[in-house]
Image (cartoon, rainbow, N blue to C red; front, side, top):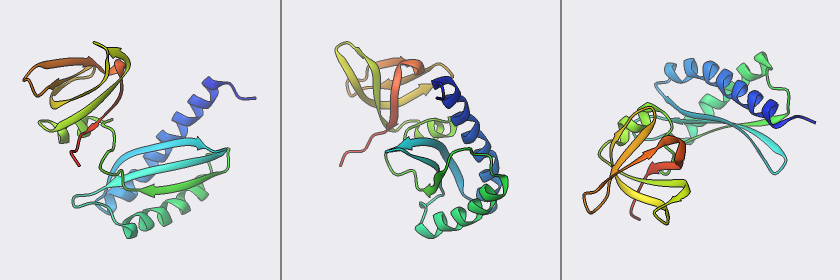
Length: 162
């Protein structure tokens, strides 16, 4: 039986190695890597790469990257478990994870969900005003700034009114 720490270590190792292997494929095609995740869903392991480009990713773009990466993954063979590899668009509601995500969303509406209630609330909406390594600041509709520690944020993503 694997311990949780071992699983987390392998998960991070697999994600980091996949990121290193996929970036040259993406750069060659002028795509951007948004995220890589290795997750277990319904008893099946999935290795997912989320990619983007100006104007959005197409099914053909995903297929192109998937075909090239499958050859690399077969050759490198660094993942112990059997898994399904998927390449997809991150979608509109993707979380902000990397600095480039914060840069792209400065001055735009964001949604923040916290792990614990802050003032009897766990969901906040506002304009992304500032961020650094430890915190995120948003301005709400009453022009009030609220600062959140990144460690308290369960989810931050661009907000859309549908």
